[in-house]
Image 1: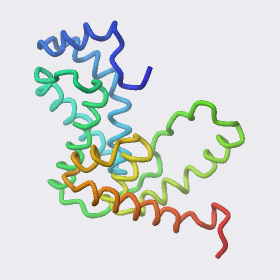
Image 2 (image 1 turned 90 degrees about the vertical axis):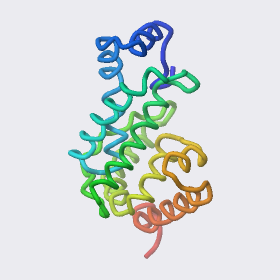
Image 3 (image 1 turned 135 degrees about the vertical axis):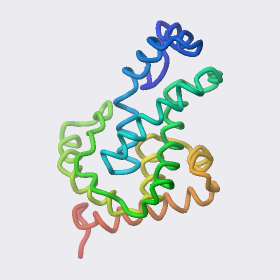
Amino acid sequence: MATGEVRPDREDVLSRARHGDRSAFAELVREHQSEVYTLALRLTGDRELAADIAQESFVRAWRALPSFRGDARFGTWLHRIVVNTAWSLRRRAGRHHADSIDDLPAAPPAPGISPERAAESAAMRPRLLEALGMLTPEHRAVVVLKDVYDWTHRDIAEHLGISVTAAKVRLHRGRRRLRELLWSELGGEG
């Protein structure tokens, strides 16, 4: 079952939360708090701001929960709230630079990945995080949403308030910049 998907036994919890049951919502928060914080941290690279975003996202989710129709999985709906919250809090804070992202939580290994490939990925992780931190916030957000969370270009564009073309351009430029930063470690010359 995909992360964030509501299992049949969780539908009751979600239904109760939608109808104002605070203890049911607390269960949903406990279930999703780690992934919400991780997404916020990956988007901002700032632990303190990520914690603020996670908290504000859950407040916004509580307020919006009665209108949650279930067209998307609860986790997907919540991720979109996190992205919107991150974007609005960054704008409000007037941040124009990226803070350190040295200690981002590790993503779980992909199913079916070989031990050798997993070791290579683990060894490369600190440098990749450093390179991600060197991207502009706009490029980093698109790269993370597309390459880590597998959002569509349309979803990225919609939730960042940009066009699909702009999302594709930012993704291309972000990936190109990562490639430039990591080229020598990936076996490139010079």
